[in-house]
Length: 286
Ligand SMILES: C[S@@+](CC[C@H](N)C(=O)[O-])C[C@H]1O[C@@H](n2cnc3c(N)ncnc32)[C@H](O)[C@@H]1O
Image 1 (cartoon, rainbow, N blue to C red):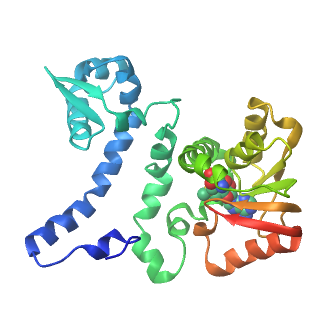
Image 2: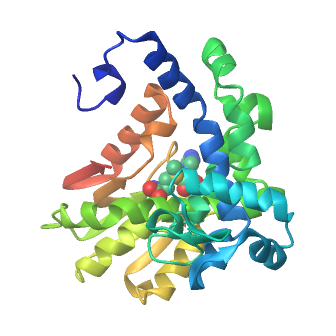
Image 3: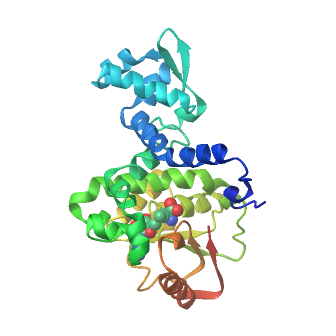
């Protein structure tokens, strides 16, 4: 029995149940693309005012009515939509998270994770493990963040940054509540994307100044977000490379950063934080 690894507490005495479980794991790819379908075809947005038929959705969206009906049935089977009878579908609480612009929206996250760049890259995962490289190298010809930095991929990069904001929304509130800023005057969000985490800390503690360090093509969005929240006076965004150096601070935030890199690369990032850190400083890994 393990709290962290739910797979390990499953008894394997029943081959049919095991086969069903493996099939269920495999079919995760269909579920992921069903999520994508609901997000990409704005189905959650169309249903936000009330239940509709697939034909009504298809007319609004310009999609194929029969195929839209099948997608909506699939979406009901995994709890994203509710079947209301009479060929009408409504939105469930889960499905609402695929709407645009609602609090807690996960739409961008779904679109980024199931989009071409990441989806095709995951298809080469086992080869990447065999060869000891990242799976994006073969498919995209480069590391994912380099790919997003290419001007021709700006739209995908913006979607990814928005997705990171969505992901942050799931944990930021709890992380901010659990994090003491006593004795801290400057916080650097290392690879902070659009700055959601550090900006939430600045909102919670008016004595703090904060920075985002991220790749040059990302930081403009962080400045915009600070402006929007009226925090520009205590915030700046630095375009740079955390493998080279990070700005001085009392507190470093590394949220959803270290999982992207191998141990040596993580050590470099953490060493750079250590050498720029002010006396008595800390780094927080989320
Ligand atoms: C998985 S995202 C996490 C973003 C943010 N911390 C969050 O939790 O939402 C990783 C971030 O690291 C940034 N990044 C990648 N390589 C970087 C580098 N060499 N220097 C600075 N930032 C980098 C990416 O642009 C991206 O914003």
